[in-house]
Amino acid sequence: MIILLVGTTGVHHTLVAAHLYLQNTSVKEFNQLDGYCDLSLDSSGFPINIGCDRYGNHVYTLGLGRLVSIGSRAINGFSQIMGIDSSQLLLKEIRIPGELDIWAASKAHWMPLGIGNGINRLVADYIITREFNLIKSEAFRLSEQVALLHGVSDNMTGFGYKAG
Image 1 (cartoon, rainbow, N blue to C red):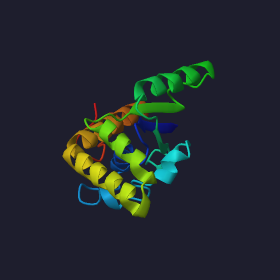
Image 2: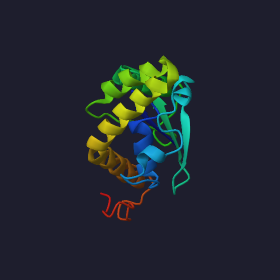
Image 3: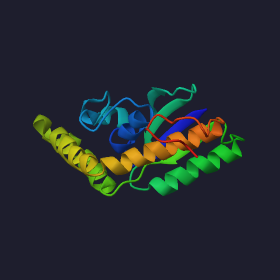
């Protein structure tokens, strides 16, 4: 199965959520993740491959801009038209307060002398730190959902809780 985490960008809170789902990070090190705040990855328009989970599912992130709901519905609609069901693609929106501020700050990357990248990172670090528990709970809900899809509802999800 492909797990696609979508948000305003694919290299900020969605990337952190993907790594939390894969259990690759903690609150102290999220800003050290490969690809974090890398706007060249986001601007490519392609999903970003984060890795595989313990079930063999491929995990990707994708930035949809400020219209996340519309982009998400479009992907779901296209998937249905193409006959792709939930056993092949799991789409999860990662929404947090401040996500539009992160998106707006990411647009400053064109500023010279790295000022734009500094603004991008400063805003993202602040908001993600503030909303880290929400992002972590979204990753936990995703792990529960995936465990249920794989018939492992009574197994430990890896976050210290039982799914289901």
